[in-house]
Image 1: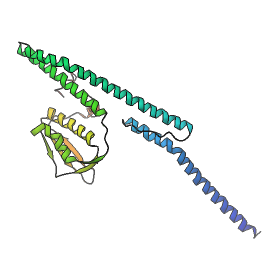
Image 2: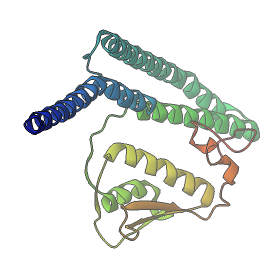
Image 3: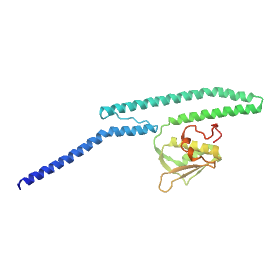
Image 4: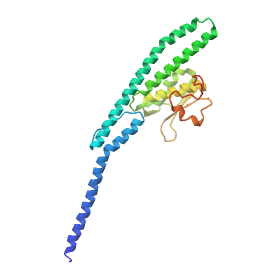
Length: 247
């Protein structure tokens, strides 16, 4: 009986080692099989944020079919957005001609009040077309992360507004970010601040040990908290009439 204990001990040890090895191999295979699914999940999240991600078509057949369908869907969405942008661009371009004729006609109107109303209407429509074109261009901006001097970028954005926009900074502040999207966002905020608050102040800082930030402030009345989500929608305005000169 005593001689059987080493054999039994070795058998138990081998069994345990085999079980552990099987578990490790199984976990590895499970991780490998789940990788395409994780990639699909990440791609779906990126797609929800408006980014295009080429999904690798690998793994089991069902996952390959799903990846192929997602890639085809992204291609269709891209074509749809491109066609939509081209259509709006063409429409806005065609509208410039009748607007120019109306502007000339407004100058020929004898009644100064009616002429002023016509000119204001033409200018408002022209501003609307400019906003539409800017919005469409922003939807198709492609950018890579790069080191950007936020102070220099803020000065670049504030420059067209002259004395109505100022920059407060302790000096150059490099940050790894997407230059063009940040520039477009800052330009929209500064324009809004100047139009509705009289002037804009861009403060460049690094709060505590956090990330660099650009704070855009104005002297306007502010926005109610209930509108914080709505103001992120394109062309949203707080007034019922949706006039361009009112909040």
